[in-house]
Structures are given as C-alpha cells and as structure tokens.
Length: 111
Image 1 (cartoon, rainbow, N blue to C red):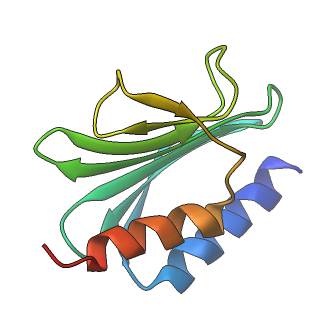
Image 2: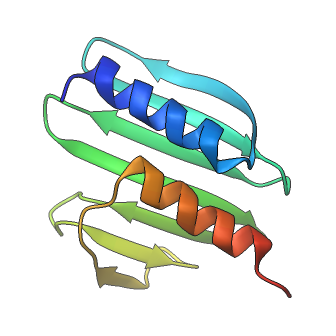
C-alpha cells in the first residue's frame, strides 16, 4: 500500500467514526506521515505510518496519562499498550477502521 492510499483510508475511517473534530498533520514525507485527530471528548489520537519500513502505530491519549496504543515496533511485533507504556500484550495487526471503532466504543462507554 502506498502512503497516499493509507492516508486516504485513514482519513475516511476518521471521518466515518463520527468522533473526529479536527485533523492536524504533524509530519509529512514521501514514505512516512504522522497525523493527530482531535476527538469529540477532548482527547486525541495520533497515527504514524512508514510504508517503506512497514511500521505503524495508533495512539489514543485518554487523559490523565492513560493511553491505548497498538503498534508493530520496535522489535515486539504487533502489540497493545493498555493505560501504561509498561503493560504490553501481543496483538494482531489493526486497520484504521478498527482503531477508530475501538476508540469510539471507549469514548461512549459509561463511567
């Protein structure tokens, strides 16, 4: 997949989620990019991709230091971080659509 194709898919998933207020480009290049999506609950999600090295990360900053991150680097393969950098569990690859579905479900979860 090219960078342009991934970014098109990512932006479509963000828009269709219904939770994105604004997009910000933090980094842009020929083979890599980092975008920040400001969400309806005041939190944000960062997505980084490098298509040349096949590296991805999805990061949701929930507030008060709590995070949800799914990535395939450094040398751990696909894995999730749940609320802290130290808590990591193996994961399968994740799509932009699945990432925004998970974040949306968490935002809408009571309590």
